[in-house]
Length: 131
Ligand SMILES: CC(C)(COP(=O)(O)OP(=O)(O)OC[C@H]1O[C@@H](n2cnc3c(N)ncnc32)[C@H](O)[C@@H]1OP(=O)(O)O)[C@@H](O)C(=O)NCCC(=O)NCCS
Image (spheres, rainbow, N blue to C red):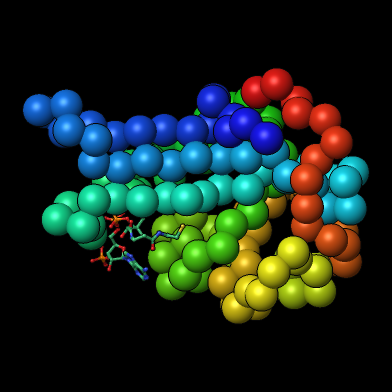
């Protein structure tokens, strides 16, 4: 599986040091409902809580919206991904996933007017859309 280049970002400081990265991956619910798995999202420890994560997430969401990408899913703190970016756990509460997960941290962001299946298994996608 390869990351989706149009939805994956790296952040550099003025000295060209890599200070953050965000990758997105093609996944699906029951092989057929395409989703974009967001993560890892990481900012170097000395610059955390300085806005880098928000910039990368905002760019990714803008790119996802402008290309009408599939709904986004991630495992992360709802206090961050819900508060700033509209991710919610209610979409995923009855999904099964390949490993242990804290249910409150399995989040999805669904474009307005769309919905997601209430149940299904989160796993690989049969076809990479080539984004
Ligand atoms: C989580 C992470 C990506 C956020 O990026 P960041 O650049 O540090 O954070 P931002 O500057 O975008 O956001 C800062 C705001 O979010 C809040 N915030 C940041 N991380 C948070 C978290 N895990 N839970 C709740 N709030 C959080 C801060 O309190 C701050 O709020 P404020 O503006 O009211 O002070 C980054 O801290 C990180 O790499 N953490 C370690 C790895 C990780 O946990 N990755 C996520 C799982 S894939």
